Image (tube, rainbow, N blue to C red):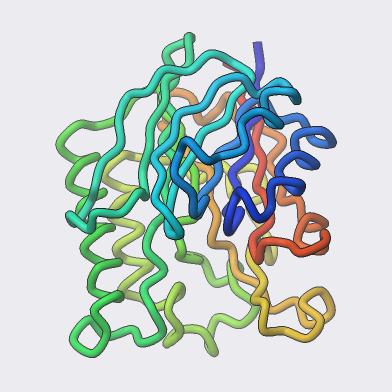
Length: 262
C-alpha cells in the first residue's frame, strides 16, 4: 500500500495546534513529521490529533526549544534519537513502519547570522552537527530509509530566490552546502523532492520579516525529503503546500509532501 508523508517545521506545536489539525483534516498525510515543536512530549496535544486518526507518535521533546515528532495513522516503533555534536538538543528521532521502512526526522541547527565558526558559536555547532550526521550514516549505511526535516540549508541555486546575493547568508553558504552534500553522500540519499521536481525555483520557507511574503517571494528550500536508493524510485507526487504559509498565524515554513508506493 502507498503511504503519504509530510514534513513541517511548525514553530510550536501547541501554539499552532489548530494549523496541524487543519493540515491533518484537509491533506490527510499518513505520516506527519514535525520539527521545532517547542514542547515536552507529554504536552503535545495528542487528544486532538488522535481524534483525526493520528494514534501513533514517536517524539523527542524539549521545553521551549527544538523538538521533533513523528505522528502517524500507521503503527510505528521508536528506534531511537541521536544527539549529534553532543548539543543536548532534541533534534532527531527515528521510527520504523511495520513494512520495515525507517523514517528519520531531523531539525538541523539554524546556525545563527554570521557564517564564521570563530565569530559565531552557533555556526560551528551547525557544521559539527552535520559532520556527526555524515559520520553516523557512513558508519552504518542506511537501507530502506526516508530522511525528512528542516535541514536549514538550501543547497541548489534554484532553492533560493537569489543565488549570488545569498552566497554569504547562512543557509546557502558553500561550506554549508558542502557539509550537507557530505551527509547525502554518506547515506547515498536521493533528494526525492528534486527527483520529482527537477527544475525551477522551489521554496519551503519565507521570512516573517517580509511585509508581504507572497508578493516578495524571497524564499528558500530548507525542508527536505530524502530516501535511500533502494526505495527512492517508489517515491512520487512531491509538492510544497505553499498555501499553508498564508494561513492564520502561520509557521514561516510550508509543509513538504511525498508519496511512497511501498
